[in-house]
Length: 496
Image (cartoon, rainbow, N blue to C red; front, side, top):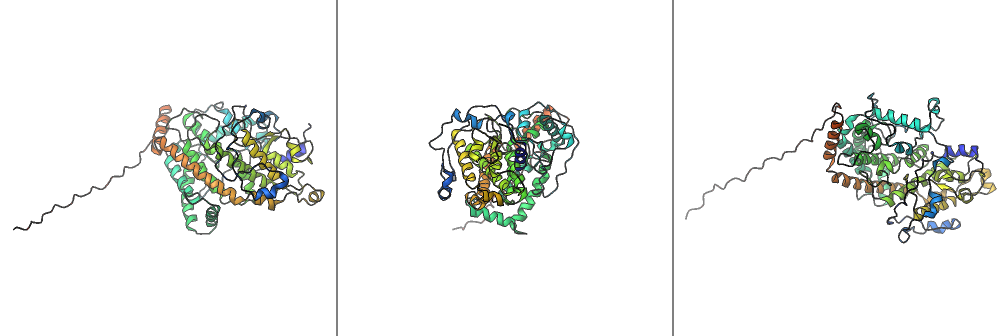
Protein backbone atom coordinates (compact mmCIF):
# COMPACT_ATOMS: atom_id res chain seq x y z
CA UNK A 1 0.00 0.00 0.00
CA UNK A 2 1.21 3.41 -0.92
CA UNK A 3 2.19 5.68 1.95
CA UNK A 4 0.56 9.07 2.33
CA UNK A 5 3.11 11.68 3.27
CA UNK A 6 0.44 14.22 4.18
CA UNK A 7 -1.36 11.93 6.57
CA UNK A 8 1.90 10.73 7.99
CA UNK A 9 3.20 14.21 8.71
CA UNK A 10 -0.10 15.12 10.31
CA UNK A 11 0.06 12.02 12.45
CA UNK A 12 3.51 13.01 13.63
CA UNK A 13 2.08 16.28 14.88
CA UNK A 14 -0.68 14.57 16.77
CA UNK A 15 1.47 12.09 18.63
CA UNK A 16 4.88 11.27 19.96
CA UNK A 17 7.17 9.16 17.81
CA UNK A 18 6.81 5.44 18.28
CA UNK A 19 9.30 3.51 20.39
CA UNK A 20 11.74 1.26 18.55
CA UNK A 21 11.00 -2.40 18.92
CA UNK A 22 12.82 -5.37 20.32
CA UNK A 23 12.93 -8.88 18.87
CA UNK A 24 10.18 -11.23 19.95
CA UNK A 25 10.75 -12.98 23.21
CA UNK A 26 8.58 -15.23 25.33
CA UNK A 27 5.06 -14.17 26.09
CA UNK A 28 4.68 -11.64 28.85
CA UNK A 29 3.37 -13.02 32.12
CA UNK A 30 -0.31 -12.83 32.81
CA UNK A 31 -1.12 -12.24 36.44
CA UNK A 32 -4.18 -11.72 38.53
CA UNK A 33 -6.73 -9.04 37.83
CA UNK A 34 -7.26 -6.91 40.88
CA UNK A 35 -8.83 -3.69 39.65
CA UNK A 36 -12.54 -3.38 39.08
CA UNK A 37 -12.36 -0.86 36.26
CA UNK A 38 -11.61 -3.31 33.43
CA UNK A 39 -14.14 -3.49 30.62
CA UNK A 40 -15.56 -6.64 29.12
CA UNK A 41 -15.86 -7.18 25.38
CA UNK A 42 -18.25 -4.61 24.00
CA UNK A 43 -20.08 -3.85 20.84
CA UNK A 44 -19.17 -0.31 19.81
CA UNK A 45 -22.83 0.19 18.95
CA UNK A 46 -23.86 -0.46 22.55
CA UNK A 47 -21.47 1.69 24.52
CA UNK A 48 -24.22 3.49 26.43
CA UNK A 49 -25.09 0.26 28.20
CA UNK A 50 -21.43 -0.59 28.62
CA UNK A 51 -20.65 2.69 30.37
CA UNK A 52 -23.23 1.97 33.02
CA UNK A 53 -21.99 -1.53 33.59
CA UNK A 54 -19.30 -2.19 36.17
CA UNK A 55 -16.11 -3.14 34.40
CA UNK A 56 -14.75 -6.36 35.82
CA UNK A 57 -11.49 -8.24 35.51
CA UNK A 58 -10.61 -10.23 32.42
CA UNK A 59 -7.55 -12.19 33.31
CA UNK A 60 -9.09 -14.50 35.89
CA UNK A 61 -9.98 -17.46 33.70
CA UNK A 62 -8.01 -16.60 30.57
CA UNK A 63 -4.37 -16.70 31.50
CA UNK A 64 -3.02 -18.41 28.41
CA UNK A 65 -0.73 -16.44 26.10
CA UNK A 66 -0.95 -17.34 22.44
CA UNK A 67 1.45 -16.91 19.59
CA UNK A 68 -1.38 -16.16 17.18
CA UNK A 69 -1.44 -12.55 18.31
CA UNK A 70 2.16 -12.06 17.29
CA UNK A 71 1.25 -10.24 14.11
CA UNK A 72 -0.54 -7.62 16.16
CA UNK A 73 2.12 -7.37 18.80
CA UNK A 74 5.42 -7.76 17.03
CA UNK A 75 7.56 -4.69 17.18
CA UNK A 76 9.49 -4.10 14.03
CA UNK A 77 10.88 -0.62 13.89
CA UNK A 78 12.03 -1.08 10.31
CA UNK A 79 8.47 -1.01 9.03
CA UNK A 80 7.16 1.68 11.35
CA UNK A 81 4.89 4.20 9.68
CA UNK A 82 5.40 6.90 12.25
CA UNK A 83 8.03 9.59 11.93
CA UNK A 84 10.82 9.55 14.47
CA UNK A 85 12.39 12.66 15.86
CA UNK A 86 15.33 13.27 18.10
CA UNK A 87 14.26 14.44 21.49
CA UNK A 88 16.03 16.05 24.38
CA UNK A 89 13.54 16.13 27.25
CA UNK A 90 12.97 19.65 28.45
CA UNK A 91 13.56 20.84 31.97
CA UNK A 92 10.40 20.66 34.02
CA UNK A 93 9.46 24.28 34.56
CA UNK A 94 6.26 23.51 36.48
CA UNK A 95 7.70 21.21 39.11
CA UNK A 96 10.82 23.20 39.82
CA UNK A 97 10.77 25.51 42.79
CA UNK A 98 14.44 26.25 42.55
CA UNK A 99 16.14 26.38 39.17
CA UNK A 100 18.28 23.50 38.07
CA UNK A 101 21.54 24.98 36.85
CA UNK A 102 24.10 22.22 37.09
CA UNK A 103 26.20 22.72 34.00
CA UNK A 104 29.37 21.07 35.23
CA UNK A 105 32.06 20.61 32.62
CA UNK A 106 33.40 17.38 34.06
CA UNK A 107 34.18 14.75 31.47
CA UNK A 108 32.37 11.46 31.58
CA UNK A 109 34.34 8.67 33.22
CA UNK A 110 34.38 5.20 31.75
CA UNK A 111 31.59 5.77 29.27
CA UNK A 112 31.45 3.35 26.38
CA UNK A 113 28.91 4.51 23.76
CA UNK A 114 28.24 0.92 22.80
CA UNK A 115 27.45 -0.09 26.37
CA UNK A 116 23.74 -0.81 26.80
CA UNK A 117 23.01 0.86 23.49
CA UNK A 118 19.58 -0.77 23.42
CA UNK A 119 18.42 1.35 26.32
CA UNK A 120 19.46 4.58 24.61
CA UNK A 121 17.65 3.60 21.45
CA UNK A 122 14.63 2.36 23.39
CA UNK A 123 14.01 5.76 24.96
CA UNK A 124 13.58 7.69 21.77
CA UNK A 125 14.01 11.38 22.34
CA UNK A 126 11.06 13.42 21.17
CA UNK A 127 11.16 17.15 21.71
CA UNK A 128 7.86 17.47 23.51
CA UNK A 129 8.55 21.04 24.49
CA UNK A 130 9.17 22.09 20.89
CA UNK A 131 7.44 20.09 18.19
CA UNK A 132 9.28 21.99 15.46
CA UNK A 133 11.79 20.54 13.03
CA UNK A 134 15.17 19.27 14.09
CA UNK A 135 18.05 21.67 14.21
CA UNK A 136 20.40 21.69 11.19
CA UNK A 137 23.15 20.16 13.30
CA UNK A 138 20.90 17.31 14.41
CA UNK A 139 19.71 16.69 10.85
CA UNK A 140 23.28 15.88 9.81
CA UNK A 141 23.42 12.92 12.19
CA UNK A 142 21.60 9.63 12.22
CA UNK A 143 19.12 9.06 15.02
CA UNK A 144 21.37 6.62 16.88
CA UNK A 145 24.39 8.93 16.55
CA UNK A 146 22.39 11.90 17.79
CA UNK A 147 21.04 9.97 20.78
CA UNK A 148 24.47 8.63 21.66
CA UNK A 149 25.91 12.14 21.47
CA UNK A 150 23.11 13.48 23.64
CA UNK A 151 23.61 10.67 26.16
CA UNK A 152 27.34 11.33 26.41
CA UNK A 153 26.79 15.06 26.90
CA UNK A 154 24.20 14.54 29.62
CA UNK A 155 26.28 11.94 31.43
CA UNK A 156 29.30 14.26 31.35
CA UNK A 157 27.27 16.92 33.17
CA UNK A 158 26.27 14.64 36.04
CA UNK A 159 27.81 15.34 39.43
CA UNK A 160 29.46 12.38 41.22
CA UNK A 161 28.19 13.94 44.44
CA UNK A 162 24.86 12.31 43.64
CA UNK A 163 26.28 9.16 45.25
CA UNK A 164 26.55 11.04 48.56
CA UNK A 165 23.05 12.51 48.61
CA UNK A 166 20.89 9.47 47.98
CA UNK A 167 19.39 9.86 51.45
CA UNK A 168 18.40 13.48 50.80
CA UNK A 169 16.85 12.53 47.47
CA UNK A 170 14.89 9.64 48.96
CA UNK A 171 13.68 11.48 52.05
CA UNK A 172 12.50 14.54 50.14
CA UNK A 173 10.75 12.35 47.55
CA UNK A 174 9.07 10.42 50.35
CA UNK A 175 7.78 13.63 51.94
CA UNK A 176 6.38 14.84 48.60
CA UNK A 177 4.56 11.54 48.21
CA UNK A 178 3.21 11.86 51.75
CA UNK A 179 1.59 15.13 50.69
CA UNK A 180 0.29 14.08 47.26
CA UNK A 181 -0.26 10.33 47.66
CA UNK A 182 -0.74 9.91 51.41
CA UNK A 183 -1.11 6.38 52.64
CA UNK A 184 -4.69 5.41 53.57
CA UNK A 185 -6.02 8.77 52.28
CA UNK A 186 -6.33 8.07 48.54
CA UNK A 187 -8.77 5.19 48.52
CA UNK A 188 -11.56 7.09 46.75
CA UNK A 189 -11.84 9.65 43.98
CA UNK A 190 -13.30 12.10 46.48
CA UNK A 191 -10.17 11.93 48.63
CA UNK A 192 -7.91 12.52 45.64
CA UNK A 193 -10.13 15.34 44.46
CA UNK A 194 -9.72 17.01 47.86
CA UNK A 195 -5.93 16.84 47.52
CA UNK A 196 -6.07 18.40 44.06
CA UNK A 197 -8.43 21.13 45.26
CA UNK A 198 -6.21 21.81 48.27
CA UNK A 199 -3.23 22.43 45.99
CA UNK A 200 -5.16 25.17 44.21
CA UNK A 201 -5.83 27.12 47.40
CA UNK A 202 -3.16 29.82 47.90
CA UNK A 203 -1.43 29.46 51.24
CA UNK A 204 -2.96 26.08 52.08
CA UNK A 205 -1.14 24.00 54.67
CA UNK A 206 -0.58 21.22 52.15
CA UNK A 207 0.72 23.69 49.60
CA UNK A 208 3.21 25.18 52.07
CA UNK A 209 4.55 21.78 53.08
CA UNK A 210 4.77 20.69 49.46
CA UNK A 211 6.66 23.85 48.55
CA UNK A 212 9.19 23.22 51.33
CA UNK A 213 9.78 19.59 50.38
CA UNK A 214 10.03 20.47 46.68
CA UNK A 215 12.79 22.95 47.38
CA UNK A 216 14.87 20.31 49.13
CA UNK A 217 14.02 17.73 46.47
CA UNK A 218 14.98 19.94 43.53
CA UNK A 219 18.32 20.92 45.09
CA UNK A 220 19.22 17.23 45.42
CA UNK A 221 17.74 16.27 42.06
CA UNK A 222 19.79 18.90 40.21
CA UNK A 223 22.88 16.73 40.74
CA UNK A 224 21.25 13.91 38.74
CA UNK A 225 20.83 15.78 35.46
CA UNK A 226 18.56 18.29 33.77
CA UNK A 227 15.93 15.85 32.47
CA UNK A 228 12.51 15.95 34.08
CA UNK A 229 12.91 12.33 35.15
CA UNK A 230 16.23 10.90 36.35
CA UNK A 231 17.69 8.20 34.13
CA UNK A 232 19.10 5.26 36.11
CA UNK A 233 21.29 4.19 33.18
CA UNK A 234 22.90 7.64 33.02
CA UNK A 235 23.58 7.64 36.75
CA UNK A 236 25.13 4.16 36.67
CA UNK A 237 27.29 5.00 33.68
CA UNK A 238 28.58 8.13 35.34
CA UNK A 239 29.38 6.49 38.65
CA UNK A 240 30.41 2.99 37.59
CA UNK A 241 31.18 3.21 33.87
CA UNK A 242 28.41 0.83 32.86
CA UNK A 243 24.61 0.89 32.78
CA UNK A 244 24.45 -2.82 33.64
CA UNK A 245 26.52 -3.52 36.74
CA UNK A 246 26.05 -6.75 38.60
CA UNK A 247 23.44 -6.98 41.29
CA UNK A 248 24.40 -5.82 44.77
CA UNK A 249 23.43 -3.67 47.72
CA UNK A 250 25.22 -0.73 46.10
CA UNK A 251 22.67 -0.22 43.32
CA UNK A 252 20.81 3.11 43.65
CA UNK A 253 18.04 2.22 41.18
CA UNK A 254 15.21 2.04 43.75
CA UNK A 255 16.06 5.51 45.06
CA UNK A 256 15.91 6.92 41.53
CA UNK A 257 12.56 5.24 40.90
CA UNK A 258 11.23 6.84 44.10
CA UNK A 259 12.42 10.28 42.96
CA UNK A 260 10.73 9.79 39.59
CA UNK A 261 7.48 8.84 41.32
CA UNK A 262 7.57 12.12 43.25
CA UNK A 263 8.06 14.00 39.99
CA UNK A 264 5.24 12.05 38.33
CA UNK A 265 2.53 12.91 40.85
CA UNK A 266 3.71 16.50 41.16
CA UNK A 267 3.45 16.87 37.38
CA UNK A 268 0.00 15.37 36.99
CA UNK A 269 -1.87 16.66 40.01
CA UNK A 270 -1.61 20.23 38.72
CA UNK A 271 -2.62 19.39 35.13
CA UNK A 272 -6.01 19.77 33.50
CA UNK A 273 -7.00 17.79 30.45
CA UNK A 274 -7.72 20.78 28.21
CA UNK A 275 -4.28 22.34 28.53
CA UNK A 276 -1.70 22.12 25.74
CA UNK A 277 0.94 21.21 28.33
CA UNK A 278 -1.10 18.14 29.22
CA UNK A 279 -0.57 16.76 25.73
CA UNK A 280 3.22 17.06 25.87
CA UNK A 281 3.35 15.75 29.45
CA UNK A 282 1.31 12.66 28.59
CA UNK A 283 3.32 11.97 25.45
CA UNK A 284 6.58 12.35 27.35
CA UNK A 285 5.52 9.90 30.06
CA UNK A 286 4.31 7.37 27.47
CA UNK A 287 7.89 7.17 26.23
CA UNK A 288 9.56 6.59 29.58
CA UNK A 289 6.89 4.51 31.29
CA UNK A 290 7.38 2.10 32.89
CA UNK A 291 11.21 1.86 32.80
CA UNK A 292 11.86 5.11 34.66
CA UNK A 293 9.64 3.94 37.54
CA UNK A 294 9.92 0.14 37.55
CA UNK A 295 12.93 -0.93 35.53
CA UNK A 296 12.59 -3.08 32.43
CA UNK A 297 9.84 -5.60 32.95
CA UNK A 298 11.37 -8.13 30.56
CA UNK A 299 14.58 -8.47 32.56
CA UNK A 300 14.91 -11.41 34.93
CA UNK A 301 16.80 -9.52 37.62
CA UNK A 302 17.12 -5.81 38.19
CA UNK A 303 17.47 -3.80 41.36
CA UNK A 304 14.16 -2.30 42.40
CA UNK A 305 12.21 -3.94 39.57
CA UNK A 306 8.45 -4.02 40.06
CA UNK A 307 6.37 -7.16 40.46
CA UNK A 308 3.17 -5.21 39.76
CA UNK A 309 3.05 -6.27 36.10
CA UNK A 310 -0.74 -6.19 35.71
CA UNK A 311 -1.01 -2.86 37.48
CA UNK A 312 1.72 -1.39 35.29
CA UNK A 313 -0.12 -2.48 32.16
CA UNK A 314 -3.38 -0.97 33.42
CA UNK A 315 -1.76 2.39 34.05
CA UNK A 316 0.12 2.35 30.74
CA UNK A 317 -3.19 1.77 28.94
CA UNK A 318 -4.68 4.72 30.82
CA UNK A 319 -1.74 6.94 29.84
CA UNK A 320 -2.26 6.15 26.17
CA UNK A 321 -6.03 6.57 26.48
CA UNK A 322 -5.72 10.03 28.02
CA UNK A 323 -3.06 10.95 25.46
CA UNK A 324 -5.47 10.01 22.66
CA UNK A 325 -8.26 12.04 24.22
CA UNK A 326 -6.10 15.14 24.55
CA UNK A 327 -4.80 14.81 20.98
CA UNK A 328 -8.35 14.48 19.71
CA UNK A 329 -9.46 17.54 21.67
CA UNK A 330 -6.56 19.62 20.33
CA UNK A 331 -7.04 18.74 16.67
CA UNK A 332 -6.78 21.89 14.55
CA UNK A 333 -9.79 22.88 12.47
CA UNK A 334 -7.63 23.02 9.37
CA UNK A 335 -5.96 19.69 10.10
CA UNK A 336 -6.63 17.06 7.48
CA UNK A 337 -6.14 14.32 10.06
CA UNK A 338 -9.25 12.34 10.99
CA UNK A 339 -10.01 11.08 14.51
CA UNK A 340 -9.46 7.52 13.24
CA UNK A 341 -5.98 8.45 12.10
CA UNK A 342 -5.18 10.18 15.39
CA UNK A 343 -6.26 7.14 17.38
CA UNK A 344 -4.39 4.75 15.10
CA UNK A 345 -1.22 6.83 15.23
CA UNK A 346 -1.16 6.73 19.03
CA UNK A 347 -1.79 3.01 19.51
CA UNK A 348 -0.27 1.53 16.33
CA UNK A 349 3.20 1.40 14.85
CA UNK A 350 1.84 0.25 11.51
CA UNK A 351 -1.59 0.78 10.00
CA UNK A 352 -3.10 1.37 6.56
CA UNK A 353 -2.78 5.04 5.68
CA UNK A 354 -3.84 4.68 2.04
CA UNK A 355 -7.38 5.93 2.68
CA UNK A 356 -7.74 8.61 5.39
CA UNK A 357 -11.55 8.28 5.22
CA UNK A 358 -11.42 4.55 5.95
CA UNK A 359 -13.14 3.34 9.15
CA UNK A 360 -10.85 2.69 12.08
CA UNK A 361 -11.38 -1.08 11.95
CA UNK A 362 -10.40 -1.20 8.28
CA UNK A 363 -7.46 1.17 8.80
CA UNK A 364 -5.97 -0.96 11.58
CA UNK A 365 -6.82 -4.42 10.24
CA UNK A 366 -3.54 -6.34 10.23
CA UNK A 367 -1.73 -3.43 11.87
CA UNK A 368 1.05 -3.62 14.45
CA UNK A 369 0.23 -2.37 17.93
CA UNK A 370 2.76 -0.34 19.86
CA UNK A 371 4.13 -2.08 22.92
CA UNK A 372 2.87 0.24 25.64
CA UNK A 373 4.97 -1.63 28.22
CA UNK A 374 8.09 -0.91 26.16
CA UNK A 375 9.39 -4.40 26.81
CA UNK A 376 10.80 -7.01 24.47
CA UNK A 377 7.98 -9.41 25.20
CA UNK A 378 4.85 -9.68 23.05
CA UNK A 379 1.46 -8.99 24.57
CA UNK A 380 -0.54 -11.76 26.10
CA UNK A 381 -3.91 -12.62 24.57
CA UNK A 382 -5.71 -10.85 27.40
CA UNK A 383 -3.65 -7.68 27.01
CA UNK A 384 -4.44 -7.53 23.29
CA UNK A 385 -8.15 -7.93 24.05
CA UNK A 386 -8.02 -5.17 26.65
CA UNK A 387 -6.37 -2.78 24.20
CA UNK A 388 -8.83 -3.62 21.44
CA UNK A 389 -11.80 -3.11 23.74
CA UNK A 390 -10.42 0.25 24.85
CA UNK A 391 -9.98 1.27 21.21
CA UNK A 392 -13.54 0.16 20.41
CA UNK A 393 -14.91 2.36 23.18
CA UNK A 394 -12.97 5.41 22.02
CA UNK A 395 -13.83 4.80 18.38
CA UNK A 396 -17.51 4.53 19.20
CA UNK A 397 -17.56 8.26 20.02
CA UNK A 398 -16.40 9.29 16.53
CA UNK A 399 -18.90 10.96 14.18
CA UNK A 400 -18.40 10.11 10.53
CA UNK A 401 -21.40 11.70 8.86
CA UNK A 402 -20.94 14.31 6.14
CA UNK A 403 -22.60 16.91 8.38
CA UNK A 404 -20.18 16.18 11.22
CA UNK A 405 -17.24 16.46 8.85
CA UNK A 406 -18.49 19.74 7.46
CA UNK A 407 -18.66 21.44 10.87
CA UNK A 408 -15.68 19.48 12.25
CA UNK A 409 -17.82 18.06 15.04
CA UNK A 410 -16.08 14.72 14.77
CA UNK A 411 -15.98 13.43 18.35
CA UNK A 412 -18.63 13.18 21.06
CA UNK A 413 -16.42 14.48 23.86
CA UNK A 414 -19.21 14.41 26.44
CA UNK A 415 -19.55 10.68 25.94
CA UNK A 416 -15.78 10.18 25.83
CA UNK A 417 -15.22 12.13 29.04
CA UNK A 418 -17.99 10.19 30.73
CA UNK A 419 -16.34 6.89 29.85
CA UNK A 420 -12.83 7.95 30.87
CA UNK A 421 -13.01 10.77 33.44
CA UNK A 422 -9.82 12.67 34.20
CA UNK A 423 -10.37 12.32 37.96
CA UNK A 424 -10.63 8.54 37.65
CA UNK A 425 -7.34 8.50 35.78
CA UNK A 426 -5.61 10.76 38.34
CA UNK A 427 -6.92 8.60 41.19
CA UNK A 428 -5.57 5.49 39.50
CA UNK A 429 -2.22 7.22 39.00
CA UNK A 430 -1.95 8.31 42.63
CA UNK A 431 -2.96 4.90 43.98
CA UNK A 432 -0.46 3.10 41.76
CA UNK A 433 2.26 5.55 42.80
CA UNK A 434 1.70 4.76 46.46
CA UNK A 435 1.71 1.00 45.81
CA UNK A 436 4.90 1.27 43.82
CA UNK A 437 6.60 3.40 46.48
CA UNK A 438 5.69 0.82 49.13
CA UNK A 439 7.34 -1.80 46.94
CA UNK A 440 10.43 0.40 46.57
CA UNK A 441 10.83 0.93 50.32
CA UNK A 442 10.72 -2.84 50.81
CA UNK A 443 13.45 -3.26 48.19
CA UNK A 444 15.62 -0.64 49.89
CA UNK A 445 15.20 -2.45 53.20
CA UNK A 446 16.29 -5.71 51.57
CA UNK A 447 19.42 -3.95 50.35
CA UNK A 448 20.28 -2.99 53.92
CA UNK A 449 18.70 0.46 54.00
CA UNK A 450 19.62 3.76 52.41
CA UNK A 451 22.85 4.16 54.38
CA UNK A 452 24.10 0.72 53.33
CA UNK A 453 23.30 1.52 49.69
CA UNK A 454 25.15 4.84 49.93
CA UNK A 455 28.17 3.33 51.67
CA UNK A 456 28.43 0.35 49.32
CA UNK A 457 28.07 2.54 46.23
CA UNK A 458 30.73 5.02 47.30
CA UNK A 459 33.15 2.24 48.24
CA UNK A 460 32.68 0.67 44.80
CA UNK A 461 33.17 4.01 43.03
CA UNK A 462 36.34 4.73 45.01
CA UNK A 463 37.70 1.28 44.25
CA UNK A 464 37.32 2.02 40.53
CA UNK A 465 38.55 5.62 40.72
CA UNK A 466 40.36 6.72 43.84
CA UNK A 467 40.59 10.30 42.53
CA UNK A 468 36.88 11.01 42.54
CA UNK A 469 36.04 13.52 45.27
CA UNK A 470 33.30 11.80 47.18
CA UNK A 471 33.19 10.12 50.54
CA UNK A 472 30.76 8.41 52.81
CA UNK A 473 29.89 10.32 55.96
CA UNK A 474 27.90 8.08 58.26
CA UNK A 475 24.83 9.71 59.75
CA UNK A 476 25.40 11.14 63.22
CA UNK A 477 24.82 8.67 65.98
CA UNK A 478 21.95 9.60 68.22
CA UNK A 479 23.08 9.09 71.80
CA UNK A 480 20.49 8.38 74.39
CA UNK A 481 20.48 10.34 77.59
CA UNK A 482 21.77 8.44 80.54
CA UNK A 483 18.92 7.67 82.82
CA UNK A 484 19.50 8.34 86.50
CA UNK A 485 18.98 5.47 88.84
CA UNK A 486 16.09 5.92 91.23
CA UNK A 487 17.09 7.55 94.49
CA UNK A 488 17.84 5.22 97.31
CA UNK A 489 15.28 4.99 100.06
CA UNK A 490 17.06 6.68 102.95
CA UNK A 491 14.07 7.07 105.18
CA UNK A 492 14.58 5.35 108.50
CA UNK A 493 12.16 2.68 109.30
CA UNK A 494 10.06 3.28 112.37
CA UNK A 495 11.60 1.68 115.33
CA UNK A 496 9.41 -0.38 117.51
